[in-house]
Length: 259
Image (cartoon, rainbow, N blue to C red; front, side, top):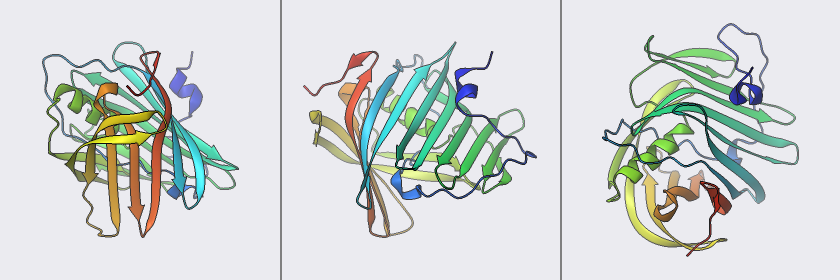
């Protein structure tokens, strides 16, 4: 029987002839912000399943994005993320395992939907020291190294790091595999802030990602009282902001409300 992951998104492999086209929703959602080095710990913090909805605003359009984390057999998890506006949308799936505090990615699929579509994939092969990456209909072989994650599982890894270290690291170097390369990212702690959200005021940790391009800026807020669930992001590129803020969520089966 096919797994839940296989039912939701079929995976192509190098050599397949599936046709993919550019997507029209590139600026509607911005997530690829982390890829951490491994974190050692004797006991892993609990990683509770959740479902969260976010209002995403870009270029005058509003999009409701739903993100879920589900536990499968053993130590395997599935993270999904997606939304749709009119005929344009996207769906992402990341499958990974967690050993102690370390996320070990297995595969990642991004599928754009609408009049045109874009598909990206990543397949992690530790035995072959290689990551197979599908980008613009071509496959690329990227170098594999411990701590290299995809655009979605990287957020899970960051949350695990914060759960294991409530002091909140001030300077984090992270790594992500995306498209044709593997790159490092650096995040600096801006501070602790009380954020006004549709759920009420929430205490958060505010991180900012550094970019080589002065026209790009990325800020992220995480809620310690909610297992460091991401509650807001703001990404600015070429003067165009993309903002995402939480509107509703359940964590471990409990509906979240601001205290």
